[in-house]
Image (cartoon, rainbow, N blue to C red; front, side, top):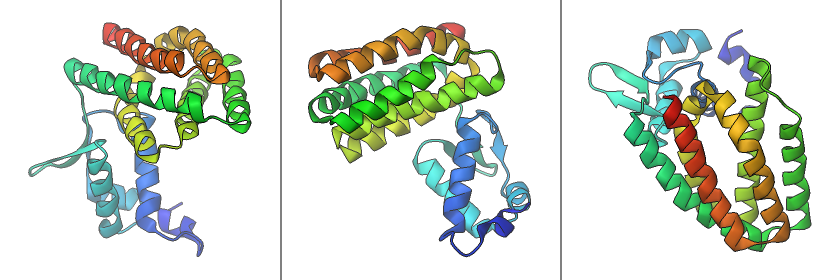
Length: 219
């Protein structure tokens, strides 16, 4: 079914819908790192015109998920190991700051919702592609919910943007990421529950460093 026929009258922006669809495809590995995204093919695939498609791709370029190459058009960002290391180093700084703020600002509702996500994560094992995908979605939700507890909108946006840039690589090595991350997530939650800003910030930084090490070793 085409993108246009799905819109109905309640969707305010075709460009927004295309943005969400392309972003999801990049993060899930449907459009892998380095792939050229040809506008005419995507327009046909989604049943949309090139104008809103170009708007969506420009937005994804600004977020670092696409890169515009002269005479070739847009391609999905492809990172070298040193660039992945750089992004994780930035993540460590931002997520340490966000964790400290979240520990001080979190409410009972924040704690309850973070625990609910963690509980779902701990019930999943990487036994299939779908279970791995489910875990990755919950992994993002877990950290996103903690960031939201800090009440720092700009910090949260930067943290999530940096996560998005390396998400396709994490999905390739999800078994390594998942096996090493489960215990760390529980520790992060315990610090969040206790309102321990120093420990939560430290754990957020260490979690980024460990994830980077596991990923770079696999690559």
